[in-house]
Every structure is written in C-alpha cells, then in structure tokens.
Image (cartoon, rainbow, N blue to C red; front, side, top):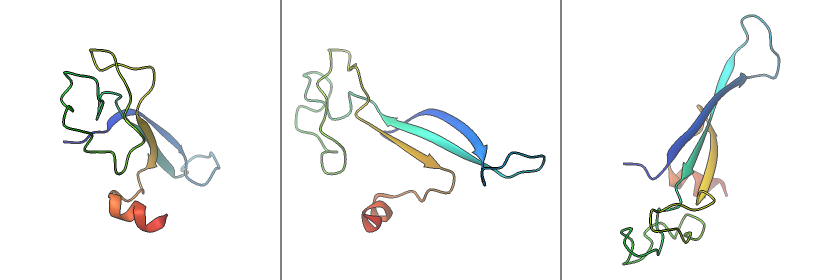
Length: 91
C-alpha cells in the first residue's frame, strides 16, 4: 500500500511543440494526506511517525485527520524512476 494519493494527471507535449503526431508526456501529482504520521490522538500514530526520515514534519490535524494542506506533494512524469534510493543518490 502506498502513502501517496494521486491528485491529478495531465499530458503535455514532450518537446514543447504542439502539432499533429507530436509526442506527449504524462505528468502526475501525488500527495501525502495530512493524517499520515500525525500526532493527533486516535489516528494510529501514537507510537511515532514512521515516515519522519523522508517526509516533511507531520501535521496536526483535526479528529478526522483533515488539515488545510497535504503533508507533501510530488510532481512526477511517466519517466520518473520510482524508489527512495534513486532519489537519495541524485541529491
């Protein structure tokens, strides 16, 4: 199971030119909902945030796990390599 929720998918011309037969690339936004890792009592993370090593600080939420913002949002393309190790090596 993933902690990310898909927010949207868009397609753009791959090489910035729109014409008949041009190649397209899909761009996706994925977000980490605010309740993931929250210290708000009753939401399952009373023993700590298991994602603290690689996500921004957890958010304080209401009792339903809602907050004004997502904990994190990433924008990826269909060519983005998946995996935390790949990301750490590129930083």
